Length: 92
Image 1: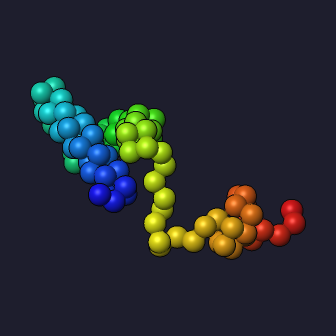
Image 2 (image 1 turned 120 degrees about the vertical axis):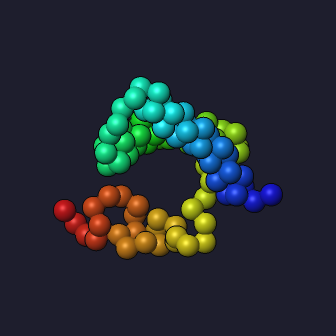
Image 3 (image 1 turned 30 degrees about the horizontal axis):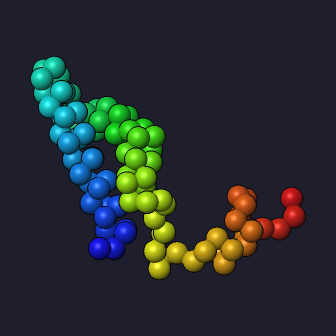
């Protein structure tokens, strides 16, 4: 099976229960919050969990980083060429 597909499915399998658990916790607490505030609280937990726990764990599970795919050229072929930050790649 395609490594990117396995990665996507593994991330989804981790995110779905996390989001469900957090929504259930908000309901269990009896918080009647506006949707925008619920979303703010939910993303305040989900995004750090994704960055620091889920994605690194899934990367180890699938055997290393997953390539960005055919849609993105390598950093050396992008404008700015060297892969360093700053855009145009000219002298500073």
